[in-house]
Structure formats: C-alpha cells, structure tokens
Amino acid sequence: MSQVRSSVAELDRIRLWHPFTQQAEWERDDPLVIAAGEGSWLIDESGRRYLDGNASLWVNVHGHRRPEIDTAVREQLDRIAHTTFLGLTNPPAVAFADALLETAPPGLTRAFLSESGASACEVAIKLALRYAQLRGETRRTRIVGLRNGYHGDTLGAVSAGGIDAFHAAFAPLLGPALHAPSPIDDPAAGGLAELLAEQGDEVFAVIVEPLIQAAAGILVAPEGWLARARELCDEAGCLLICDEVAVGLGRTGTFWASEREGVAPDILCCGKGLTGGYLPLSATLVREELYESFLGGPERTFYHGHSYSGNPLACAAACASLALYEQDGTIGNVDRQSERLRARLAAAPYPVRGHGLMLAVAGGGAAVCRAARNHGLVIRPLGDAIVVCPPLSIRDEESDLLADALLAAYADVA
Ligand SMILES: *Cc1c(COP(=O)(O)O)cnc(C)c1O
Image (cartoon, protein in one colour):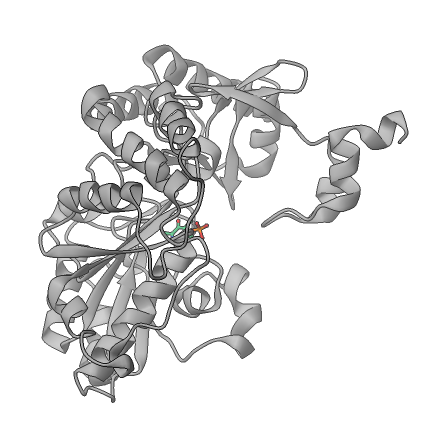
C-alpha cells in the first residue's frame, strides 16, 4: 500500500460514506481524524486537542475515558460481550432497566431495550398502535407528529418527523401520519387542539420532543405547551409519547425534560446519552397497563426485536453512567455551565437560545464552525444556528475556552 493510500483520511475518502454529509464537500475537505479523547477533549492523530463542543453529537455525558465507565465495560468484557435477549436475560440489562426506571416520570414501569434513538421511537409508535388495536380501538390508525419534529431516520420515525429537508423525499415509503404545527409557531397548541378535535378518534398517539425540537435547530417550545399537549391527548383518548432521546438524561437541566412541566408521558423514548456516550443503547419506557394489554396468547405478543437488544456491554456502561450523576452532581453542573456559557456568549453577534447544555447561537452556520476548528473547538451547525452542546461534565475553564473559541471564530469570519 502506498504512503498516501494508507493514511486514514485517504482511505476514508475512497471507502466511506458519512451520515448527513454531502460527500462532494467531504471529499474536498481535510477530515479531522480523531484518534483518542480525554474528558471534554478530542485528540487527533498528531496529538492536537479540540474541545468536544457537540458532545460527539449530543451523546457524551461524563467526558471521554471516564475511569468508572471504562472499568464497567472492561469487567463485563471479562464475563461476556453479548448474549441474546430473546429467551434469555442478563444481569447488566436487568440492573440497568431497574436503575433507569427509578429515575422515570411517574407511572412508567417497564423498559423495552434497543440500540438507537430511532429504534426507541419505532418501538414506541408500534407499541402505541398495537395498544389501540388490542383494546379494540381499530379506528385509531394515525400517529400525530409535529412540524420541525425529528425522531430518527428509520421509516416509522421519518413518518412522524416533520423536517422537510430530511423527510420529504421519502414520502412514497411513509405511513399515514398527521402533523400539527411546531410549538414555536403554535404557542397555545391551538393547531394540535384543532387537529385532535377533527380527527382525534383516528389517532392512537401524539409524539413530541418535549421542551426543545433539537434537530430542527434547538427550537425552544413556549412554557406550558407540553402540559397543554398532555391535556389534549387525554381529551382525545390517545397516548402521549415523549421523545427524550436528545433532551433527556440531564441535558436540558432537569433529568427528564418532561419534568419541567410536571408531565408524565404514556411512553418515553431515550437513547443518546444513556451509556454516557460510550455504546449504542436506547430504551422505550411504558406504563404498566400498556404492558398488561399485551399479556395473553401469541396474538398479543409484541413482534419486534433487534439482534443486540439488551447488550450486556452497553447495559454495563449505562449502569456506570447512571451512577455517576449523583456522585458528580451532574445536573447542578449543567445549570452552572449553562449560565457561564450564556454569560460569555452574550458577546456573540447572534442571540443564544436553549436550556441547560443544549444551547444554540442563532447564526453563523458552517463557516464559523470551520473557523472554530483553528481555535481548538469541534462544533456543528444546524442550518444557520451553531449548536453548543458539550459533555455535561464540562468544567468552568473549559466552558470559557469553548465560548472564547467560538467568539474568535465569529471574529475570523466577520
Ligand atoms: C438523535 C435523535 C433521535 C435518533 O437517535 P439515533 O440514535 O440517531 O437513531 C431520535 N429522536 C431525537 C429527538 C433525536 O435527537
């Protein structure tokens, strides 16, 4: 192999296809090759360090190479890496589900495990439809999503999604979903009320991202919107599914975003930060009566599963991660660093929005993100907005460095 072809970047250029990436641009650019990490930092092949400003796409919680999580994974590796969850169970999966449900909003008592946020949402949608069918409510065949909503990239999740740039092209493959306006355009949920008044008897569930529509650009819902949606679902006799894949697990300053308005969903989806950002794992949490409706003969079985459901390595990482919140005072740090970042980013040329450590500066886009790299910061845009979403363990001096690097990048581009 030639010197050039053996470089990771060159081989990537000819062999790989990256998610959500225009490869024509990717092939022209010099890709950053991350070889290692430590705490809030990513380290490239030549040893240069960059702050992980988007927590490796919103998944990292306690920093990279946290000894407690590393050890939990290593110890599990000495026992077994994987065994199926179909017909068998394993200690880390049981311990994880128990610990997770201890944190859950009231009424959620059962966990169905999968490996991605998209899968957690597929499971939620399929379970909700089956629940209606098993109760004899066969007229209820529609899921309601929101404009600007994002629930992952599998087809059920895309059906419920509402970001045209991502979703419109796949219309021929999609199920018959209904869409209500985004909370940012419908502060009193009048659009959702109208839709449910007209077609509520055909609807089995409404799926929402509570508090923040993340993938659409960190769009913050007006206060009271979620509580109103809960009331409307109760009136329509349909389920409320809260997709907390992005906003859950402390990211927005409470352990669950639904907590902020005292809302308990019928189904809660979580993923991303569950393992602290180490391994793929997601969960769909449901109420006991929903679970009970599936008890009976084979016709009531929930026919859904994945090869790696209940993976012991992922569950061991998740147990270790969940245990760290209290030890580290993670939620308190989210508030503290959020305030610190907001204070420093007040000098940015655009306003900052968001909650906790899910923030966005409302302009600058890809050009500023590219410039930020020269200041030792990895960060990504969503449209024009720049998402500031570091590990929840970020420290004072690192928050300051992050904000200063971003301000320097704005100055470079101006
Ligand atoms: C990221 C995300 C998903 C999809 O999770 P994957 O693990 O990428 O499949 C679903 N819902 C929300 C709200 C997300 O932010």
